[in-house]
Amino acid sequence: MDTKADFERRWMDVSAQVNSACERSGRSPDEVRVIGVTKTVSSSALNFLLDVGVRDFGENRWQHARELLQHPRAKEATWHFIGHLQTNKVKYIVPNFAFIHSVDSVDLLSEVEHQAERFDRDMYALIQVNISGEETKYGIEPDEVRALLEASFKCSKTHVIGLMTMAPAGATESVVREVFRSLAALRKDLQQSLGLDSLTELSMGMSDDFEWAIEEGATMIRVGRRLMGG
Ligand SMILES: *Cc1c(COP(=O)(O)O)cnc(C)c1O
Image (cartoon, rainbow, N blue to C red; front, top):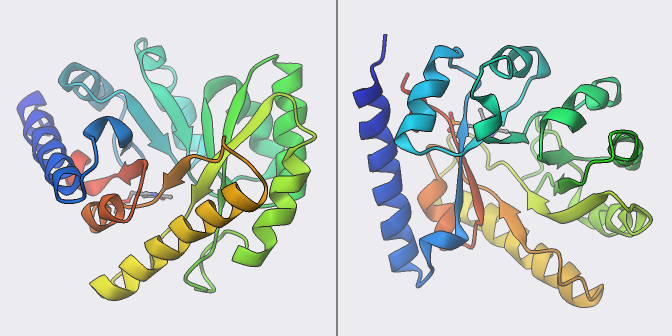
């Protein structure tokens, strides 16, 4: 069983790496939101995470999230839904989460907007893009992003603020960096061609590659194992 000191040490290590990646790329650590991915921890770890200063939690499954959300301090964190989302689960996600990183269809976007209106709650969404072309990965093709963004212009409660991707597992540094660089270029291109100043976020980078992601422009990194252990 991990102690608070274990979480503290890992958080300090991750923070130090975030800081040096920012320094190397001339960025400020304030530009990078570190999301602790809680999918492997039980709710007893939430106290430790909150105590050591983690303020953003990421979950990829509603079944697990609903347990953690029972924690008396759950509201002290900002919750990010980062996994594949079925439309019939959106009604549970919207009231509990601030950000959804995995919007990948017009149907899903419409349901998020519908529930956001119902709960009278502003939602922040990112479009998940399958940059690497891996068949097992969720997300839409890069050339489909524009149409989904245009569909989002009709939404009043759902604010699409950026793009998300996952690098292929176990790929070399140059392949992973190329994936991140492509997402950053796509964001910039869409921001300029659609005049979308609000498209500011890049959610990319996990335990094995968040330093490269920061150097390539990530504004949100999703860190599981390196922070939670295991
Ligand atoms: C599990 C998960 C992460 C974190 O992965 P680690 O390699 O443990 O850091 C990040 N993003 C998504 C979408 C995940 O499912």
